[in-house]
Structure formats: structure tokens, C-alpha cells
Length: 239
Image: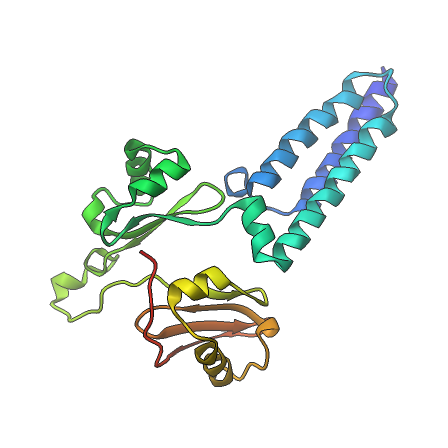
């Protein structure tokens, strides 16, 4: 009996350390590969606790192996946008200024009812209030409202405003995003001009760079404060 108690405590502490190492994201915020690892770890942890005939090491080694796998997947996902897309997928626009993107709904295997539920969860009850809705890689839906339905309702203040626009990520964690660059219709010369204006020497030094069709640029160098400024860029936008 004492052996089982000691084994249970040992495995519990090991699993606790494993999840602390993996990070603090909640279950609903996990990427697919993280959720799979979590489920497998939970199953593996019960084996050495319940079966006294199985050596404790036989349960510990697979747990440590999964931690190594987790770090490798995370490392390669950060180094390559393509690897990240293969492992975790990519955000998909399900509502744009033209309305619901039916093709995206089919690709994600979700229904109109699912869409409405997600939009209501974000605090909006009418599709006409939504400029963009994006299905993130962890399954959550984020909504960008139309300007007239923002938290401060500008139409009630009779203000002249620009319509909400979707910023497009051009650089992420030191890597350019070719697909997004193509969508944004932004040239390498324009990117270089933005980097020069932000006083950043190399793409590898950029933590995040986003632009929108109004020329607004958000750029942040690694371990430094962000910069936000207007540029001459006038390009594409996610639709």
C-alpha cells in the first residue's frame, strides 16, 4: 500500500512539473498538438499509479519523451511558418465585409448555428455588426466589429470615421510570411522602407509587423517597445 502511495505522489509531482514546463495556457487555448500531448500524458500517468507490477520508470520515460517532443514541435513551429501551419493550422476568416464565407465554414466543418454561437460569445448578436470574424488555430473565434458598432458607438457622436480594416501580419518572430505578403500586395521595398523608418536593421530582429490597407503599421523589435505609425503603403486586405 505504501508503495502505491509513494508511486502516486511521485507521478503526480512529475506530471505537475511537466505541465509547468509546457506553459500556463488553459485547455481552451491549446494548439491541437498540445491538446493531444495533454491527453496522452494524462493516460500515461495513470499506468504506474494503478499497476504496481509495472516499474515506475516505464511510466516516467514516456512522459519525459513527450516533453521533449513538445519542445521540438514548439521550436520548429517558431522557426518555420510552414511547419507551424502544418502542425497547428492557420487562422481562417469566416466572416468578412461581404458576409459569411461559406467555403470557410465547409473547410472548418462548422454550421451557421456554430457561427452565431461564436459571435454571441464575442458579444455580438447580429452579423451586420461584424466586419471580420476569425477562427483561430486553437478553436476560438475573434470578432472585429464594424466601426459604427464599436464599444463607443461613433455613429451616435456624428463623427466622420474610417471603416475598420483587418491588419495583416507580414513578419512574425523574425520570419517573413510569404502568403500574407502576397495577400497584402506589399513589396520587399515597402517592407524595407518600414524597417528603416522603425530603425530596425534586419527582419530577424522583428517580433511582429502588421499593416492594414490604410497604411497603419504596427512593428515591434524583439525585447523592445512597439512602434505604431502611418506609412505610404496602400495595398490589399483580408477578404
